[in-house]
Image (tube, rainbow, N blue to C red; front, side, top):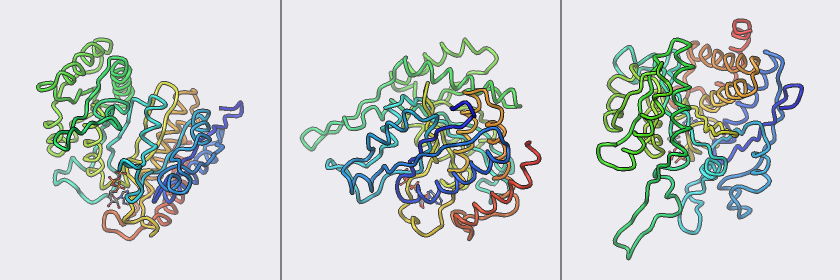
Length: 369
Ligand code: ATP
């Protein structure tokens, strides 16, 4: 951050709808900063992803990686394309490389329902969900990415890795987040989601969780098996607060969370490490709708709000926290007004949704100022 509170932001729109949702996000972030005052951005955009790999032979150019390393934060759209693969047949996914490169161990996936959305679950309490899945993002089963072994066309093995070095900061992050939420009326519960009854790796995961829990006596430390958690996310999701889990389990549960919000286009995320952080929607490049103006930019915009929160906390800058609140308030207000993206059977496309959120800022700017 420069002395006049200007943040350098590395922007990686990626492929497919990544570009379509990034432009509205940048526009809304700039507008929020302008209205709150006292902060600004310098966005530096870089090509990276599957199309870049096809055209230039590299998915994440060194210049993009260097820019990301030097930036105050990284915004990422979505990367990958079905027909473009590495020679071994695996997906082009530099977003995963960034998590490993920068040690972004905490994948924060909020499940917060927006107003006036069609009911996903019959119970009225499901209309107001507010819980968080924290997906460990640098090891677990994904540690085997690129290292799996197939023997004699008869047997395949991938190995899961759980380490104390990653688990300790991960659990501390989860407990601190629950504490922050409790200060604002949250439940003050962290549940360790695992399969400790079957696997040594998960028994160790839980053991480290219990050790770290002792440092946070004000927060309730619960245990839950992943299968029971999937059931609870549908049966009584309003009772959940902070869930912390392994990489693969978190990948699956966070998509279930996106389903509870209305779809992938509503689900923001942040991948946070000790120094760096990447903010991107949970969704992929959506080749089925790319180029049609139908992408819902809400997840990307809310990921931008998470970036403002992180920058505000890290640099002790209340203006950034206020700008985050303004973005969320404007999104809520726009949906209260009856926005209905294509994704949920409506006819509001990317441009329409963006226009409504920008208009809602007029109203909400006064309230959060
Ligand atoms: P990845 O493996 O890269 O995460 P994916 O194959 O799981 O991607 P997505 O690209 O996330 O899939 O798309 C899943 C479904 O959700 C598709 O039908 C897609 O059109 C829809 N979808 C994803 N993002 C959005 C969005 N922002 N707006 C509207 N629909 C979306």
